[in-house]
Image (cartoon, rainbow over all chains, first blue to last red; front, side, top):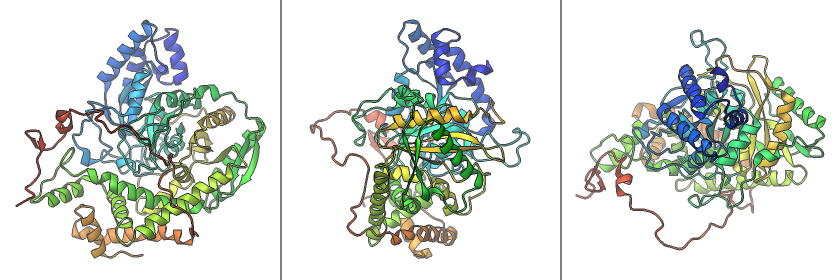
Length: 493
Length: 95
């Protein structure tokens, strides 16, 4: 049954349609794979019984000719999406025991279209991190770590925050997974694990039922092994939702139709500010290769300037903590999750939140509280919002002269667990190429472009105009064809 | 901007997070480092630049002000660490 877990979603749908196998067989193979990759610590909660029930229902629908666009495809769900009746942790101690009585809109859309849930996957606590090492439920290991679980000495990070999603998909334990991206949390782990992921335009996917980190930046998206699979999955995830006031009421295109391979005459912006000091030569070389691939397919590279790029990270580290300090005020030990008693209500709050939040989450709440406090609000928070206007303005101007932007996804490949952990600012630099996209609300895709000298995958990023995910899929398809990325991680199910 | 221990203790209280005394010093160092990093924003000329709170459509949708959902007291309470008679229970607030 191993080969079933190595299929793409598109091929699995063909196999299900022509009765080569059933959804139950496909799901059973994946349940076995989920068990086999336990050394990666990718899953927080496995839901094999529910998966089999969903697969049986899928086979029944298919038999009646009522199969949906994702019917029978087993996927993993980042444990930031509320799932009715299934524990949802946000990888935090403070949500101990929380079982949502409702389903997030995005996961409800996936189940409506027939997808099968294998379980809930690990992440950085409340999606705050770039290495999946801040989870209360333990670090996730990148399946590209050299050796076998018995011989692993230098375990690599899968990236973050959607590290469990990326590891599960790369290790062939799920055909795809949901991710969320606030500053790079879909694209950077996709790059580190050699898979494809897209953060759609802000407003494309409903945020309802996704545990909030920074509401003006958070956006859900798919992570899968091909551009086409991301197109299939995003079509199911996206759509207008009156329950999210920032959800945009426009039709969801059939993103697969954008995969025409024809990019002749397309203008591809190359931002000079992304050649940051200290960027490795192999990242630079891969970027050049990407430009050559697109030129060979008839696209036209255009030099562009995004002058405020270097200010994106500092802007993010004001805006995101400010929003998170407000969003995470709800974890008070009264209505859900952990409670640590105290003599007064204030003591109960302080004890619960002191015990329940990990160090990175605590740091960000404190920074957010500080920049929003009386006397500092204008100097920090309003200043950051003004710089955010400038960053968005850079992109508005650049898109006057180009149709899509090509950059590396991250300044390096995967690093070892524990590296960068002493210096929060150093860790933040992982997101230097991705965070601009969230601040401007644009769609961004990462796809594997090749392997570095150490044999680890490196990713290229495409950035598009608002609600023009179709161009990303079209150009992504061309890069995918040219890159011929067939390498697999050393550890797979 | 460099934060001292007393300021960190004050912020922690505002955020209602208990921080053990012995962690305050280290935390003050980390937070000061992050604030140092973000202060480079002062280099950017933002005179007459409006703040951007969200990239979403600025005008929020409106709907009739009517009850659209509700009536699940049990579901709302089911995750409460302590509940009684349809209420969440907390330590006594009013003497």
